[in-house]
Image (cartoon, rainbow, N blue to C red; front, side, top):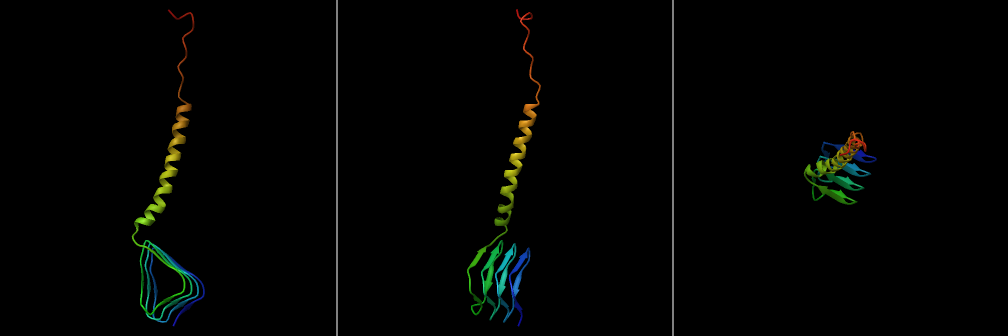
Length: 113
């Protein structure tokens, strides 16, 4: 039997709690799955973003269980802010180029016909 006194987090990996394993905190994965075998116990919450939570009926989770399967959520969470930043940079570059554009000189009154 193994026990973790605290939280568990993985990035692009799996968390597997085998029979009799215990976690006194939360379990979270980003682009990964959580699997709980018979007798596994989690004292906190379980979250799998970009993955799934698979648990045995004999596994115990004291907190909430959240699962957002598929990597699309992760891509969306990172792509949207990057697109906003890219748009702001493009706007600043456009404004600077527009401000530095040479202005035509008006004709002097003597040159007007």
